[in-house]
Length: 216
Image (cartoon, rainbow, N blue to C red; front, side):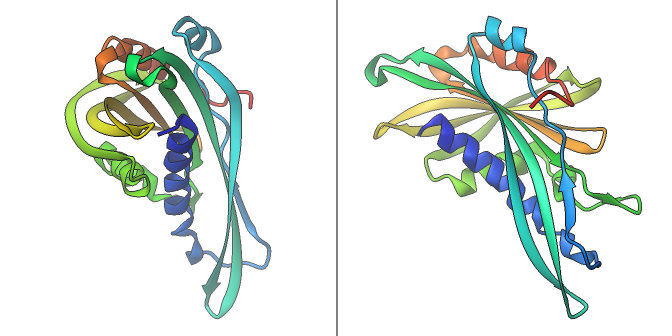
């Protein structure tokens, strides 16, 4: 499994679900929804050994038939990804330490949030990742804890899983949490090898340091 593949799957899983409930709206012009970028504090990431290539804007275009008319929806989401190189012996030096922050618009209309991510549990979020990436399997919940993220008490769930790396299987831990901040939902994901269990402290600190909005 490559880190790019992991992040892409996580992001697209959210995008597909986000765009699925917007067809209830009507209008002549395309409905444009956009989140504001979110990111970990640069100093915290650097101190933990993580590097980022910046923030990606992932845009989804959909057309819906509403009351006999076609309606276009353009949803822009943002993903900031951090990677950490780790020496895994048999696997060599692999960029497997991954931390991603995803911001997706709450899509609130007339006081109602149309983005179903708001109602998703951490189990459902990690299930979205697993269902769209066959290289991640045997996902089981290990523990839960709370951290402060963006001024909100965020419930973080830790999962054990098996990832396929260079044709070999590797046991990993995955951490998932989500909060609502301003007009967006913020999802934070961390993944690292189980043999480096001390990495959990870094992932939790990255979650605590998340900033939103952040410079893309």
